[in-house]
Image 1 (cartoon, rainbow, N blue to C red):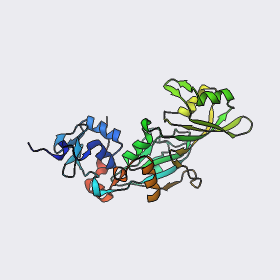
Image 2 (cartoon, rainbow, N blue to C red):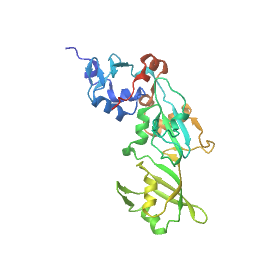
Image 3 (spheres, helix red, strand yellow):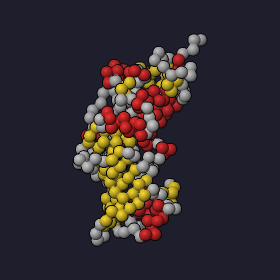
Length: 281
């Protein structure tokens, strides 16, 4: 039996190549492979397989032309100022407004949201066509900082501020500790604070202050890693990073441009990647 490039050590790992092709994050691609949805050269794929230019890759029986070597181009990255009252999901049974409603249409790819903001939280959302870049920004092991401006109904005591930046607060899903916490002013019943945290658990900031008996009345993300929410972007508006800004971000996360690139749109259309979708349960 002839050895194909998929069984050699050369080439790109399959889940990584699929993520680079804009089909989703590397974690999603690993799930697809585990679910036996992916085949290479007519055989069911396995995690850790490597693929090259000559390998025939299919997802759910449809051909996929992978983003490899010189076919690749830099990904796209959007900064969006999320408004309160929007969800970070493509599907909502309640028919609520989604942040994805505002994004430019893509052919053969999809926008990947870097982290989430809950329904009542505003501020910086990052979208990219690169699964690898999204993974570097979101995965807990990279400990990327998230900075928030928060308005509380009440005022933190000095002891509470020391606790939040020291031993932390124990919630039902684990310990929460802020890297930084500063007073930003306020009058009367409401007080503003600025905090930095390196996690992205569900409603983590809100739940932390609620545990102290201080409800959050406003919450806004102002920074994600090295990317700040530009003051000129008003609520509901977005901008796209230019090549220089994008390369700076890729360098900051330690991701060579070649590993974060996206497949050319013409290739994506040719492969009809837009028809590859998550299998319904």
